Amino acid sequence: MKIEGVIFAIVAVFCAVVTPVYWFMSEDPTGTTALVLTFGLGAMIAFYFLLLSRRMPPRPEDRDGEVEEMAGEYGFYSPHSWWPLAAAGAVSVVFIGLVFAWFIFIIGVALAAMATVGWVFEYYRGEYAH
Image (tube, rainbow, N blue to C red):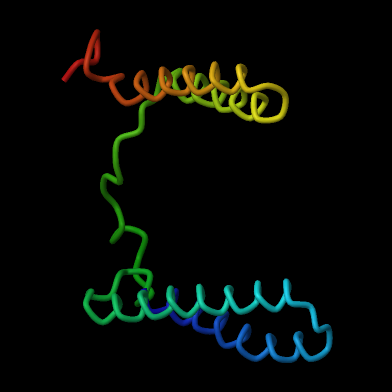
């Protein structure tokens, strides 16, 4: 986590240096505000990562570890699920509803709710029930 913290600290320092120069040269309040917020975000993440790096033991990628050290299970991913496709279609209908008509948006939200419930409870029934 130390490397990531240093990277975000570099981003924060860069934005702290560039922001006054940008404000002085352009007098643009929108861009200056965006740079100030980017500085704040980089500083918060850098602080958190550097604080976390002191509490954790070094990871293999922090100390030039071997590939075998990170071997193991990372999680369970459903190999034959159609629910992500249904969720993507439902979200597409939601965004089309935002553009064209409110009733399409409501239909899309209902479809998204059904896709979410189906995806979450996919392994609680049928052939793959736990």
